[in-house]
Amino acid sequence: MRWVAPPDDLRPWTDGGVVVQAPATLPASSFPAMVGSMLVLRLAGAVHRAGVGPVPAAALIGPCTRPSQYQHHGAVHAVGLLIRPEALPVLLGVPGGRLVNAQVALANVGGPGWADVPAQVQAAPDDEARLGLLFNTLRAAVAGPEADQYRALLQGLAQALQGPLDQACRGLATSRRQLERLCRTHFGMAPKQFQTIARLQQALHGAAHSGGADLALQAGYYDQSHLARDLRRLAGAPLGRLVQGARQGAGTAHWPLAVGWQLSR
Image 1 (tube, rainbow, N blue to C red):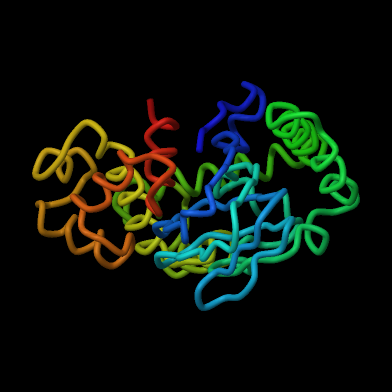
Image 2: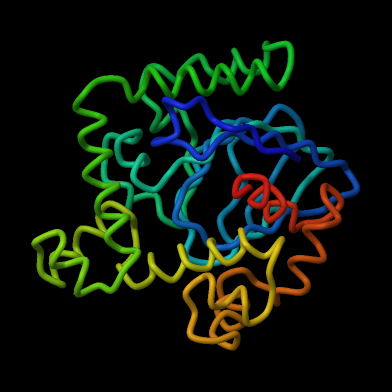
């Protein structure tokens, strides 16, 4: 499993590409809650998402407000893109909140530019070429000043949520009620929930180098107990188990955490 940095011009849209090559001996993958989305094209194997259903071979997986377990059937080979929260509504052409805790076939949401992508990905000679194809298709899908202006507005909303909500309202010249509506519409979750999940993601990305109280403080938690509570609720396991699993690489269900460490270097 490995992360591939995005081209510089696509960094506002995607956090990069991911190559997944899971052996048949790995029964599942575990993902924490996340504010971003995943565009995934699977070349081999079958995957079933617990509580949701089979994952389409070409799928757009939306933001998640809870941990997700993906059961594997056979060896799984896939490539995909990590879509930033502010980019999803632009890519969909509709508010991103519609896709929270959901997955849809790419053919149903991707627009005409994505119609031939699954076949092209299958025919590509290697994973580098496959990711290059995905990056190029994303670039074409979000081309134009209107798309970038829309993304920039949503990026401003996401950045405002990094601080206190009262401060976010002042910075955006909006009320708490309007802020709630904007977040639910575009990100699929309430402002506080978005903050909590984004903060947990920050903590998980830092877990390769820090732990305990230091990690909690760096990620903006009051103390270690608050971090531990969010880990159980939003990542499905205590920090020690997550880190131990991630350090085993492709042989563990917690490999997504190791990919997150590559992203945050």
